[in-house]
Length: 322
Image 1 (tube, one colour):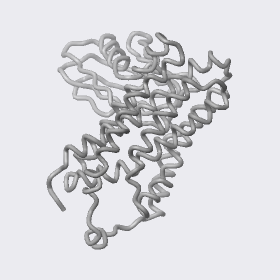
Image 2: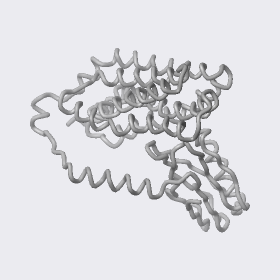
Image 3: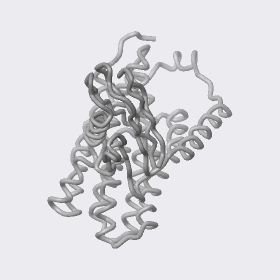
Image 4: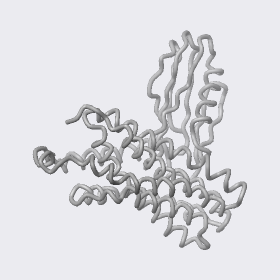
């Protein structure tokens, strides 16, 4: 196995990952505007999130199976293109049933890209698999965060139809992927190498891991989280939190803390960092001076907040659901 990483290929795949996950962040940010446009209730709005989550997540193993058995490099530009067009049509759809249909189609595009993209990111990473896959995932996280940042101002400025303009950059990336396909195809290992190391799938282990993850996520997830801060800082340092929506990708928030900051000021620092790092769907506020509340409202998905680590001496952090 080669020790070098094909950085150009990783960059291309990472940008494509950002484009496809842009749809994952853009469509939920359109839902409040769709509620007003079509006078939707909670159930109808929630059905949109169900359509997006089910089609983008539950269908992925089928594309993965297809990719492993037949190879489907065209899924990279095709999946991104479908996700982009679906996102645009969500903003342009004249009726609610059409919104549900194109939301589902956008989710299919999202599902189509990920298995093939991850496979070729592994090929491009060669022996540096952890570094390559982390760069591939950075693109997805950036695209997901960029979705509401781009779409919300467009809709406020131009109306709901203006949200369709956000799909243009993703379509351009899709065309760029088409041009990159011959280069990416050369990353595929030769038949002799593939036959020498065919790999093995442990279906039972995968089922246990998937079931455990699903149960844990459902048991812990909530629409309201409280971060309690105790004691002041006796050193400079950083507190890191992970915020993960159900069915979405985790976002790491870093909070720099200065020596001598009291618990109330630390709570304010945490609040500011969360507001800056999370999308507009999250509401963050300081409560009781030393607590921070992080909330979303239905139909937005539930989420988890976890303390990753802290290098600040003396400060105690407790995270719990409301």
